[in-house]
Image (cartoon, rainbow, N blue to C red; front, side, top):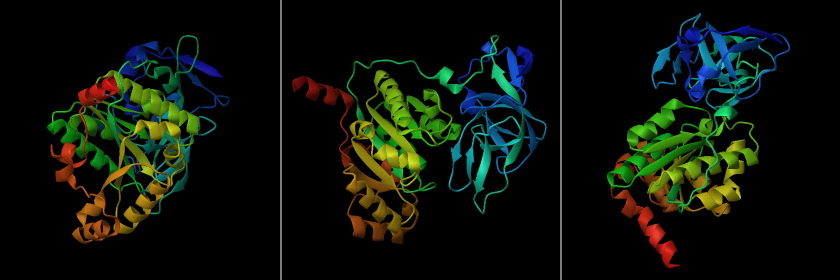
Length: 357
């Protein structure tokens, strides 16, 4: 393993990705490089852009999207990625050329690419960021501290999609907006998927007091994470949202019902005890019906439907006729009446009920 000293002033002039936003750059003193350096998921890497492809910009730690140019030097995070509409990729076993697989700043090596996705933006890793003791920096170093909430868990809605691009992020954001319009303080989290600043920033724009994702629990993505690790992410994020004393929580479950980590989460006792209601986002009537049946077999509390199927009035009517659950469009989700439609109690009412019992 080779090491080299890195200058702090140099670091501050680099493009730092969303995925690495929680890393304390002041602790960086050296770079690790050489043929014997094997990266791990979560390692922070300095890399040079060598070719612009599908990901032509980068979500920065400060919230801005930066256009990428060849020879840009960027700080991103190694991680696995499962995006059915783009790439499946895994962390490589060396510091050779790799791919930028997500605009949130994920470096990986593509195994599979969707037929309609462009070739990826390619990176040449320069080295892993390390401290003065040559200890590599990893997202796990930035995990939120363990805390114990003395408060009861507020009413929690989970938004689950039948597949990627079913509209779950939009449903979650509009749900947050509706609760905010009703006077609730809202906490939000994306608990599975891949680091994406645009998702958490949208939650904040919609009115969330606090929005977290898996990076706050030390993971660049949940792809290839064990069920126990995903449960740990849920528990960490939920505890911090409870400590924030919000009136309601909205969590987004990334990817689709059949994606490996999502499927395992939906079978988890941790998930069951975490949510009070599920809104299923679907792209069409058939996927909505199949999704409801799948969740019903797991005895999960489905309370409503949403997603891109609402864009088609005919598909919406077919769905309502087939299922009978409320179908909520953006206006309904974003209205203050959503608390009455879904009978969502205020946190203070939950506390009073529990105190009385």
